[in-house]
Image 1 (cartoon, rainbow, N blue to C red):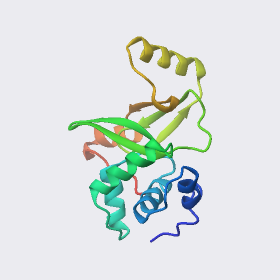
Image 2: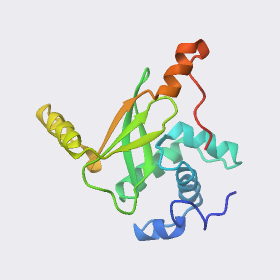
Image 3: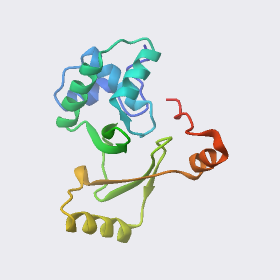
Image 4: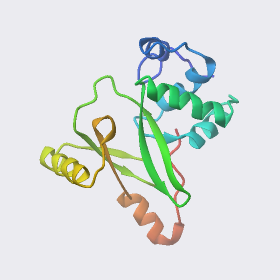
Length: 166
């Protein structure tokens, strides 16, 4: 098990206690996996696979429950990922200070994300969403696309590249 006191995205115990959640082993393990992603969102199945890889067995049902609890407590942000099997929720640790009107471009293949700092564009996206009856969750907009590296690999006939290791 990784050192739970020295995660790159802050101290796991402090984050849990700050939102009044008891630091259970499942919560700690899930936060460790999410903290090791360099602010990339992960779905529950990916978290499950990572936990198995590092030798921790947590049921998928427990992962879903814990993710929902931590999102409700304001510790995680949730975004939706369109996939062939429907929409999947992806989670990331909420930064200590979320900029209002944040917008990220997210590669749907490798999950790399880039912050968009063009405020007129962000405002236009917000207005378009509102005009179509959509609500922007947690003041964060996520635009999914395919990065040039993943597009080049797919075009070269390599199919879908493996996701970046976390």
